[in-house]
Length: 121
View 1: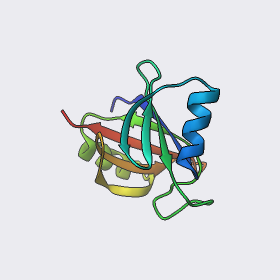
View 2 (view 1 turned 120 degrees about the vertical axis):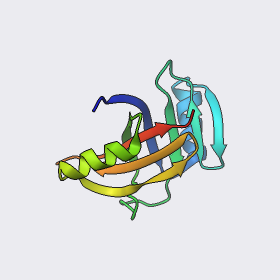
View 3 (view 1 turned 60 degrees about the vertical axis):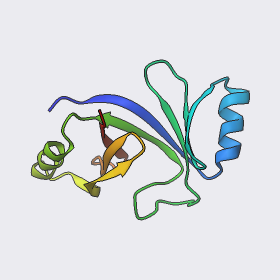
């Protein structure tokens, strides 16, 4: 199974404050609004996604304020099967729709959250 980083997601409690910081302080530009709580920032070939999460601790979907690496897969169903065979801990084990395609969410052995994404053609 080939894996590559395809996106960095930053979960924040206040999207307006995050947009202000990342654009006005750090100089990123918004490339796309996916809705009122999700924006993509221009960052070369590796997009940075800001997504509002109003929880201060991990919620049922494993989101908390913090940074999550998005790993690209060509076949999300095969990836789920491979990860289950490897006894990986899932947060979301059913491919779920998101703006660019489908995703699943897992934890590494230390509790860090990773997402696998399959982009729609």
